[in-house]
Structures are given as C-alpha cells and as structure tokens.
Length: 406
Image (cartoon, rainbow, N blue to C red; front, side, top):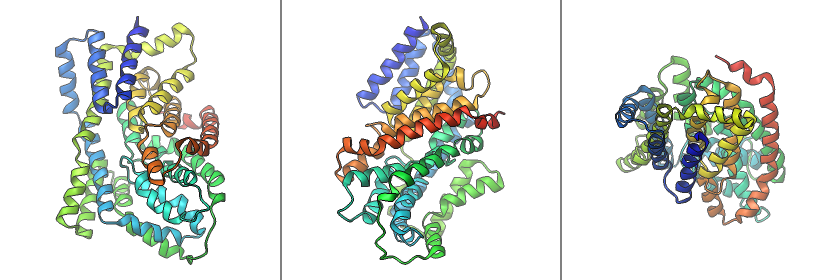
C-alpha cells in the first residue's frame, strides 16, 4: 500500500514538472497530496507549516540564498565579469587556462542560468572558427559546474545541511574529490583541444589581483564565515554591504540587483522544498521507502541512485534534486542517524542526472547562446559523465566518507 501511495506522489511530481510547473509549487502541492493520502490532520499540517515558517532553518536558508543571488546580480550590473576575461587570459596557460577558469570563477556566484554569464567570456576566448559551437557549449557548461560539488554557499550544499543535519563544512570537504575529478576530466577532454594564440603576455600576480578584484565580495564573505564563525547569512550580508560601500553603484543597478535577488519565486522554492519535507515527516511516509527496499530486496545503492538521478534529470537543478531526493530518502540518509556515505552517493547520483538534464537552465541558455546542436553537445560530455559516474562510485566504496561520521 505504501508503494502505491508513494508512486502516486512521485508520478504527480513528474507530471507537474513536465507541465513546466515551478519546483516550489510542485513540491508544496506534493506535500499537500501526501498529507491527504496519509490522512494527516489539517490542524497538524497547518501547525507544521507555521513551525517551519518561523524556524531558524527556514529564515537562515532563505536569507543566504537571497543575499548571495543579490551579490551575483550586482557584480553583473557592475560589469565585473568583463574584467575577469582579461585577467584570466593573462594567467599561465593562456587560452587553455582561461576557458577552464572563467566558468569556474563565474560559478562561484550561484545564480539560475549562471552559465549564460560565462558563455560570452568563453566565446571571446574561443572565437576562432576552428572551435565547433558544440565544443564551446560543452566546455563552458562543464567547467561552470565544477564548484557545485563543494563550494559552501551553493543552495545544494546549504540544503544538504538543512535537510540531513550534516554540517556544511563536512559536506563540502567530503564532496571535494568529486569537484577535483570533474576538473581532471575537463583538463583531459576539453583543454587539449584549445590552442593558445600567444597574443597575451603572462602576468601571474597581476592576473590573480584582477580576478580577486572582480569577485572579492564572495571570498570576503567566506573568510568572515570561516574566521569569525558568524552565521553564513550575516557573513554574506556583510560582503554585500561592503560591495555597495566600495563600488558605490547607482540607484538603478542596485535596485535591479536587489529585485532579482529578492525574488518571491526563490523564496517559495525554499518554502516548497521544506514544506514537502514537513508533510513527509508528519505522514510517516519517510519510513516507507527503506521498508519497501527490504520487502522487495532492492539494494540500497540502487534505490538512492534511481531516486536522485531521476530527480536530477527531471528538474535540472541541484537544489531541487536535493530537496526532492533527500527528503524521500530520509530513512536512508538521516532519519536513523546521519549517513555520510549515502549522502555522498545521493549527491553524485542527482548531479549526474542534473548535468544530463534537457531542462537544465544552464544547458538550455548556453546551447541557445552558441546556437549549437544539443544532441552533439551531449556527445561531447557523454564520456566524461560516464567516467565521473564510475570513479565517483569507486570513491563511495572507499573509507573516505567514513571520516565524516558525526
């Protein structure tokens, strides 16, 4: 019976996403349907939502994501990203280094469709006709997403801590090998195809200074968070205030950046995510999936992979596959005690689905920018993705994740 109930909820989530319903509304609706199917009392559900809205977890998570999005948008308004191109091309390695570095540097600032910001920068470096459109798209797309495994201000990592209870520092360090693996694969599959034109002199320290000058509010916020042990939201707010004081943006670009950062859609995405988790907890559905794996003798790893990979490929968003997958898999990941190994596998599985998702905004926007053939782009990234899956699973099998047990 539990299997049928959960399948109904999951099928409705899939249907809603296919109909382009926003992830926040989809997950909120899924929570309501779960509560209805499991006959959760209305008063208990309302109380659960009220407790959620006034909780430190919800308020802190919302503040972090809104503030970091605002910083990224303000840097965009200030044309800081244009200065990145010049600085990156003067690093040792020239164009080869620039194509790898530019998307990663832009990726330090989480924002929907962020690959579109780095696409013109990469396109400027790879302007020669020898580079196929599909290669430009694939290179920009690949390097743009390296940092999402371990950069601690990304919504996926923040949500991982909020949902599972595993500290964000542990999540970041535990998943760092996956980020390094992705860099190595990019260096092996994309960098060798890039030719240096030798038109730019190498100025290492000047380049590093130029890079830091372009994105300094982000490392400043991380430094404040790490050194002074302040709340992450407060650290990011101080970084934003410092940027406003130093850069002195005009009224129009400042208001534009803040408006995009303080998006009601972004806030409702967070609420929808956590409200779905609340409904699953109140209904008792969280315990159902582990019971089903025992009943049908399914390997735990297979269940984790299928749930998170499917969530990733359907939504094309890290925050969404974490929100959906981790909540559904609560019985494995954290309900009976935090399981870092399973969290590692869940993130890897969802990430593989996300990077291949035709609904992924970064892929859609980059593909449109370069006017490339999407099928040929998939051919460019298929082998690196397969290798990442294999080696990522091998890391899961090692004792590495055991170092992060609380």
